Amino acid sequence: MIITIDGPAGAGKSTVAQALARRLGFRYLDTGSMYRAVALAALRGKVRWDRPEELTSFLRSLDIQVANDRVLLDGEDVSEAIRSSEVTAATRFAADNPEVRQLLTKLQRAVAEGQDIVTEGRDQGTVVFPEAECKVFLTATPAERAARRLKDLTAQGENKTFEEVLSELTGRDKQDAARPYGPLMAAPDAIEVLTDGMSIEQVVECLESIVQQRQSARPQPPNPSDHG
Image (cartoon, rainbow, N blue to C red):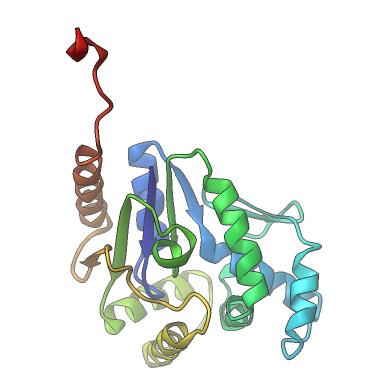
């Protein structure tokens, strides 16, 4: 079973998706970390963003592996490095590159093949896994998301104000919604969950209930004993 969790930055997708996957015994896939890893590698390699063909060629030389909550770039654990503000600001160049999206979409589908998986990102239910059995659009108000992001940045040692984080986040929302490839949007059959005022545990319980409803609605294989 494939469970997709899409939503804007700061909605808590990664934290909730990881917790839900653990509870269900499913594999977890953080697709946003793949784009961040590409951005980090490009920054290190001084790839020019105004030459998207260079980025595409550069990506083909990279080995990106995502295993639950860890991200490996050419064998190096970059799980923390990809969360910096510098990488966050540069990730859009990778996300807006159609060839990069095509290559990473292919990789994401390969990872999920034959797996029970919880996958989260921006376009999982709309582009990457349009046939997924359970789709969730996880969101929160901009102020709530900015407060969460500020808390994470402060924990990482970055000094920013709430107003700066809120401005960056709302700007990113506009960029994500206007993206020509894989724009941020809820799939028509996704269930929207607004997480303002909810604890992580409450959100996970809500999603687990949604998954259970989807599982119970799945067609059951015929019982051979029914045919005598």
